[in-house]
Image 1 (cartoon, rainbow, N blue to C red):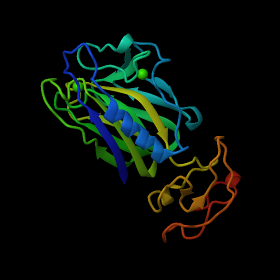
Image 2 (cartoon, rainbow, N blue to C red; image 1 turned 45 degrees about the vertical axis):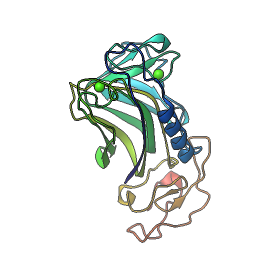
Image 3 (cartoon, rainbow, N blue to C red; image 1 turned 120 degrees about the horizontal axis):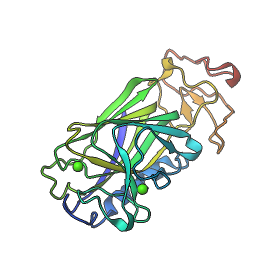
Amino acid sequence: MATVYYAFDAGTGDASLVRAASFANSEAREAAFRAVLGAQVSSTESFESITIGTLTPIALNFGAFGTATLNGIGFVDGFAGGATNLVGRYAHAVSGGRYFDTASLFSITFSRTLTAIGFYAIDLGDFGGSLTLEFKRNGAQVDFLTVPHSVGGGGAAPEGGSMAYVGVTTTVQFDEVVFGNTLGGFDVFGFDDFIVGGDVELPYADVPASCVGLVPQGPSQSCGITVPVVASTVYSIVSQSYTGATSTCGHSLMNNPATGSQC
Ligand SMILES: [Ca+2]
Ligand SMILES: [Ca+2]
């Protein structure tokens, strides 16, 4: 199950030279999403260090939350000083101004498991397309949702050139997100300022597939295993308090990380 944090700022139309008049709604929702994540949030991948024109696969950096690879259709574009690409897409930040521009399907594969992702999305739905998010773990779908943005036509405002914030938390860990477009090749989207986060990473062995979805995956709980939240990417288990519902995992808990999960 996923929880979506969404907000929208109207655009000025696809043919406009300027960005949305305000990002206030989107930025307020980002702040609210970050408040939910607390300390479990990565650094921001803003695309500002990636050369304009770079095609996929594109390497992304999420600091303490690992790396990722962006595959599929699209490229990094950029316009300084708050300008647009003249058809309604642009970066979130004024300084720098780089973002990912895509007309179709793409995916981000992460180096670790996560339970949260957030990003700015530009120019959604102005030609009738809807953004979908498929969450995967080890190649299998664990969640799917259609982002609840408005859908218009013809590139006009308010959808044309709009800015939206989309934050999602999931109750099941994922290691890949597939970004779909119901009118791929026709309605083009822009993306910027990705963050990821959520549940702490388990050491050495991940949560076994038999545990996925059985208990909530909260900031301090994974399949009934309580692990500490530390700055390093290496964790050690300090307690083994089983707090999950009755499941096939029973009360059998992860043992020494060196020997893997016994759940
Ligand atoms: Ca950017
Ligand atoms: Ca569009």
